[in-house]
Image (cartoon, rainbow, N blue to C red):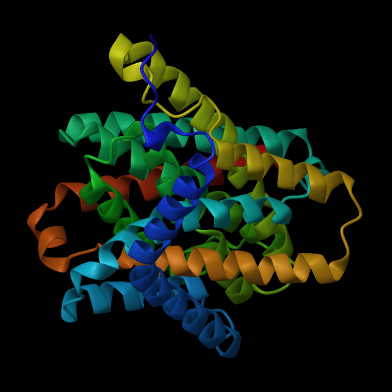
Length: 352
């Protein structure tokens, strides 16, 4: 005689159980998610009144200040973690709507080759520098991808592949802090250096797009450069952003080759869902006539999502812990910045 299934396995009750679990998870995340969302909205609003200042930068700086000065209740922790990971990935998906393949193709084969070289050699060179400095592998790869591709968004995206079990969250927040610090320093330094070299606005814009870490930081530097620099800088930067997908695929493949049999099942898919979503948005923007109102709304949503995530990441940046890591991460970040800027400069001079 067969034993009856327990009530918890009754197919009729399964949907109600799943709904209850989902509702419970939402309630747990609500305090922290509400906090981060409010900060993201505030940063987005303030950013509209401060031309040249990125809402993402505002959000992460405020997050660092709050995280170091204000003791937050433990009830906010699940929502903060959700914002730093899941909300960040949603923002990356919408980032794909900024990328138009036709604009990138319009750069020409030479500049496209330069962009590929910047990302590939920037990552490999930074990893080599990190090994020479004795840095941890996870932090080195995060800095390499963040500085070579698209800043904090790349750090968050790559962390899900190189640290799927979230054992090195301190490396993630350290890499984000370094992106903010060194990318922000590039905003005045690159235009100043380009002026000393004697670059015209277009060449300077190409260099800014190929060198600076965050999209928002590129926009700020392009505004400082003036002329036609901003448009060309953003196109080159978005070409680097597009490299996020193949880089994550390569890192995922490498993780599978080196992982033990029992760990492979816990690894993310070769192309994570949010990366597939990012690529889908690139295809939509490139081949579908998307109404301007939809693009505007998506742009606001993307800024809000990424600002929310940046605030959450900022909360995790503890100044005492950052000081305690010593000078090596800062040396790595400085050398990586110089490497990426040097690769971009040399490539642009050859291509133009």
